Length: 333
Image 1 (tube, one colour):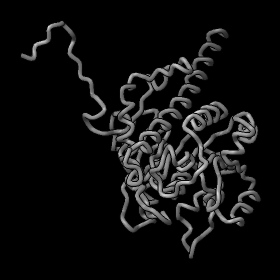
Image 2 (cartoon, one colour):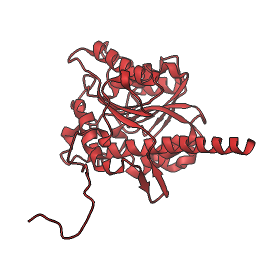
Image 3 (spheres, one colour):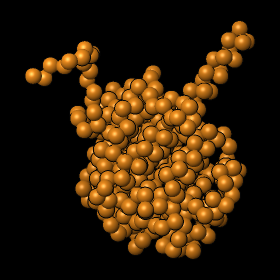
Image 4 (cartoon, one colour):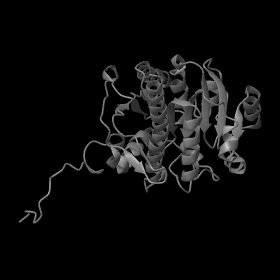
């Protein structure tokens, strides 16, 4: 009774709601010693650094679940606005699972994070880290020192420049201060910073004294993308750390510290493309997704879409540079 009336070739569809929920349904490689890829996605389900609402330990799982909507693009995704196909083979992307987190043990958890990211980098693979609260950026950034000097670009509602809170130096309000103390981080740009509660005035004074460029969404809208790029060192290696609260909470409410006046999806998408084409993005993290505060699931889904967007811009630039180099060699020959 189920026989089809018209002939067709039966396929395995691998629809978003079937199978293992890896990031965008990409292949899984949980043994980093066997890693063979161009891009490695790794989760850090950690929220011991939060100062108010916890829940970012479930961030990587939420982002992965949201990403399955975009799993139809395993052979590349066509963008009709740019008339480009992004993330197409032979590009190899794998999901490396999650860093092991030890409950109540910040030091051991941070050591595990740094070790995992360092191993990915040692294999020449671009690491993409799914947070987790923003304190995870501290060991992530430390693991990148083998790549040479970096410009750190933070996209966030909050300055995250707190030195210590009653002796605690590794909370989610301190990653940019800790990064500024790292020898391989020599420049810093902080975009999306806004509103009361972002940080105390003394933190802003210290960040400015360090030389950090600080711009709010309102200021960015006034000067435009080109104005932003004029303040970012061109052609350098960039580490991007992206907090989901950089987006307006009307779009992404699933975060512990939402702040009105944030970016729209299109604004952040455009900013990603501009930054990716302005220099060499060697790693990035996406943090502070707390799915319990968004029953619609749109926060994790939007985060997944933006991660794929940024990966597409990074790899498309590299693809064009490689193609241009190949063509130049042919002309010289």
